[in-house]
Length: 574
Ligand SMILES: [Zn+2]
Image (cartoon, rainbow, N blue to C red; front, side, top):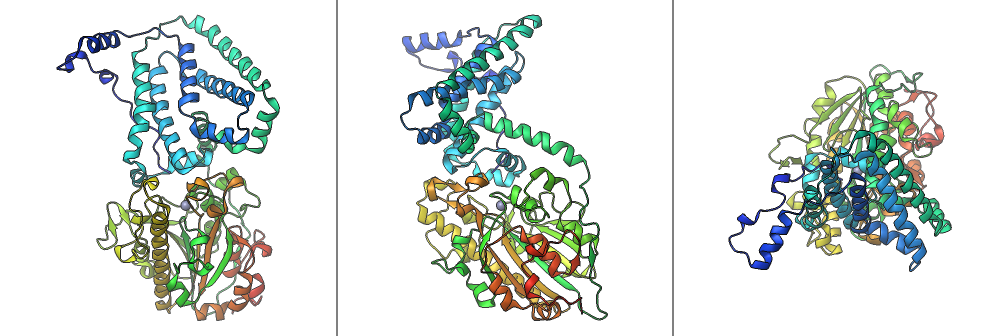
């Protein structure tokens, strides 16, 4: 999701066109314009807060009302209770932010950001929780460009421009500070009483909704993203400044036999590819023809840690994983890459997306997203094959065992059609409009599947590159970060809170390939691994599996999370 929130407000001096600007006007129209021109009602700060809260509750909460109505259709008391709660909750929050000097610019920003948030929430079925707000904040200009479409114009006009014009016509009378000092607390206390009173109208239903359908609160704007923003500011600021806590400090790599070839493991972090559309998993379309030719170990029952890049990528490289999920802890400590670097297996993160999400902090990072390769890059975006450019040379620069992460752009939506070159336009016609709502579902799936075909080609090319590097024992692990909804249950894209996420967003493909020498040297039985691959697996295994495969011993290693544990000879490195 893009960073769309902070759009510059329209200049107040252009808020209303003066009558002189109109060459013709009838008598009635003229009178109306004159009245508008002189319309400057005095509105107190608290009344403005109430009016804005009412406006948000009525005009900007379609997804919230639809989801709550579905719980208790036709229950009037429940509706009244929720209305009271929503208006007062918004008003309490605004009471902390809206003052005479801040009211107009702040409400303008809120009208625009709310209109955009509601547009994306209704169009793609996304929830604005703290994770989604972080996705928005981390989005780069390229991603935002793909999401700004003509379909935004009407909602912005109605839900942002009109209320903004009205607010800038209002006069907020000055008031002595001492008066505000007692009016505002009294106002907030009144709101709390009204809010509590409205909950009493249907307290059992409201309590059950807040307990059993917590995700609905992430649909209430602008509360949802303001709280998410505050959570992000609070949790990120101290951690960003502090150095990450070291982990696995007892880690040791098995000694290298003299004359043995160094190992090179390429870890491909895929983007937005879901298991359902993966040819090797038995999808009705062969979307992975090249991998099928090569013969890889496929994990058909693989599950992601999160439903967004911001959650999944840090989680995949952490020792905690989904089973001990704690976002703050994961972000505040080192990753698998730091452990590998620490024992002398130098890592390199090559990126064709929006960075490593903190995972590669303190280790080598190279962004190719801005590369200028004329055959692979255009309009500030590159095809994933750019990640293979100069790969072998980069690896050989640092002697010894190496781990290289390739972070794909993959199936990053909604512009799936821009994720593959023209010769992969196999399933036709593909949706070639970033506004997915304008395409029939089959066309969206066609574009998505073409992008999967291109990932298949990219991975096959990566394997061929590794096969050509016979000065290394080589291996490749590919795993996607999360899945994608393509219109199932009315959902598009991804990022639904994990607890209620549909399988489309959490089932992901994973494949592995090993050169003959790698498997021999490591004593890896790939047939045994193919058996293991049939079991349910999740992102949590990455940390211990990579350590186990590369023979790094540490107390942070968990054999139960190592998919190779029962398929390798337990002897020390030959
Ligand atoms: Zn992602």
